[in-house]
Length: 83
Image 1 (tube, rainbow, N blue to C red):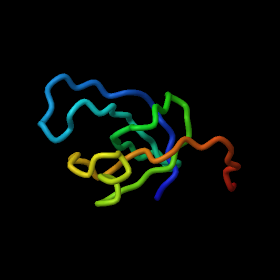
Image 2: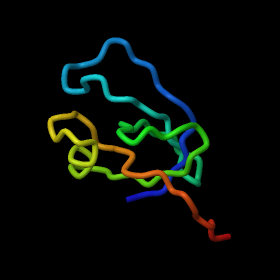
Image 3: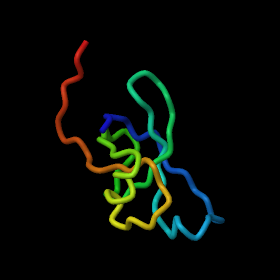
């Protein structure tokens, strides 16, 4: 799992069948790396979230048939960043 911040949404009208109608979010790590994740929890821009990656990401999104390797698993309500 990794902590990331939601930067915004990614809109794709044409997708492979394995993505269904999952919401997609652009995430940024604390070091600035950008990634795209499936969002089954409804995170908003600015939210800090924790993610599941690899094969666990498919199960975290609620449908193990979804083609993803990064899923937002929860919205962080409180977190004090170190440093």
